[in-house]
Length: 114
Image (cartoon, rainbow, N blue to C red):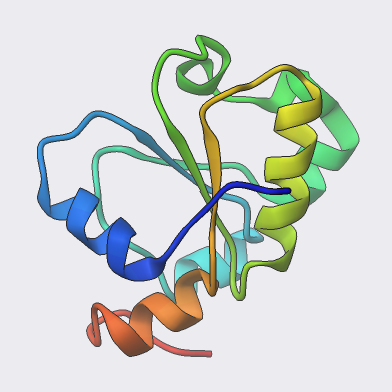
């Protein structure tokens, strides 16, 4: 079973001072079109992760100290990455259910929908 958080829960965490990593695994054109502005954001396109493996992970993720919330467009790619991270022994990783599409529709209408 893949651990998940809802977009509403993500929105609450984004408003807080909580320390975490928001790992966006969408491709760069998608990210450029619609994104969440936050200092806790790390961008790692799935295509780069697929070609470079664990070497592509940002240092903030490799320390394995903070919760990692994995985000994509609808939640499918992020679920794959969350599952992969769990197989790499990461314990505190969560798929953002519904992805940025649902986040834009339910939490922050300033984020563009595509």
